[in-house]
Image (cartoon, rainbow over the protein chains, first blue to last red):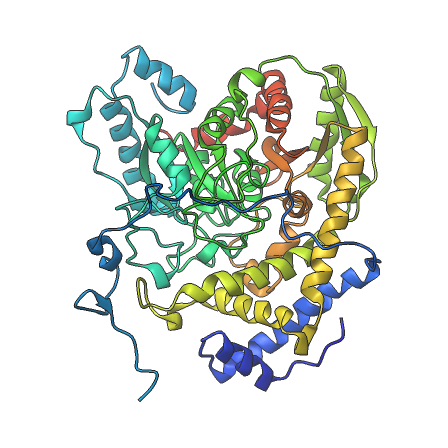
Length: 100
Length: 461
């Protein structure tokens, strides 16, 4: 598990990737806490896993598909689609401009 | 007449028309009015019961506030969703509503279920009904507290790694984490999708079996539910089965002496009942903490990416400290630049943990262990250490990582502080009937040493 030491700048960068805004104080606090957490989880290095396959789910599962023409029971009415938004115009969600 | 009565018992009263549905619901709403301000276990109450439906038989139940309930506010205890009214019903609540149930209200949790104390809730901590200065555990702390103070005869919780069993242990009730894939996650606000399991918190083993029968089974809206037959758990638990029960030193390290005493006391009782006790070896649970931390943080960072405040909810500036910390660590473990390979390493160790249980379950039917290393902690303790919750869940995490089923039941009280002690049984994948069966035998033989009744006595009508 080769890794680079985490700086405050890195924490702010990771937060930006996640769409989160942190204060300076939060970044300093998280840097310290993340370091503690990471030093704990290093104990996995004690286990030899070179030949072990990874498991994504503990039980074997397969994809589920709908038959063509089957009724979509999860369809929402327009009212339901918009009942929780504050940013609506003419049955569309309003979002911030990305391109000029 | 109703105080402390089990769900199954109330159902009988309703069937015999000794009490009406309205009387039962009003009874609990009255108790909630009286005690919820002290405990802060319910976030939202459902007072829409229509007495025109008086012929319909309905059993009240409390639901953790991370299950989407159509028309009833669902917040996951986060300000991001403080005004969210789901336009659809989760499969678990849909099955309950189609059965005998009426949703009494939605219960508090750690925000997004991130935590083990219910203190990270954006709507204030829930108090432990046994001692209001203590945490009820978490993240299903509200659900555990309403059952132990009898503000609902039963509740639904969800567990990712300990979030049903640990609060059940600290609040002194029965808490079942089914096998991963046994119960649908559809409409459960996702935390770590490869681990999340809905399950019941109840006063009795029979109630747990009764609820599981209703909520378990294949769901076409959740591809991770197993197409596996759902037995009639209520009749299954009443068969007199004999088990080979494994115990291991690894799960007693760092465990409080009084909890160990309860553990050994139960072993003597199990032997007397004709079960065989066998010493086994299991991987140290400390590795499960690491696997859990990596997998959970990674899946959290992905699952919480959808909360952009556009279609519903508030924007991302409303996330609390714990969620932000977990999202950032999740991105970090997934970013090769910082911590390359840790996610795959964790998934490989998950394989080792599964293989470890498979080996053990060839020798024994069930594994018995304490649920938590210590009894309920004071509120405020968790905040001091960013990693504390995982340590409190250490004994619950291996079963969650392996996806096997496990159940907490109360077994005695600590002497000085009179707090509940919880023990757990772990069983093979999709063998809930066996862990329930032995818990039922223990309940019949010992009445869980009177813990549940004693808890309710603190909250008279």
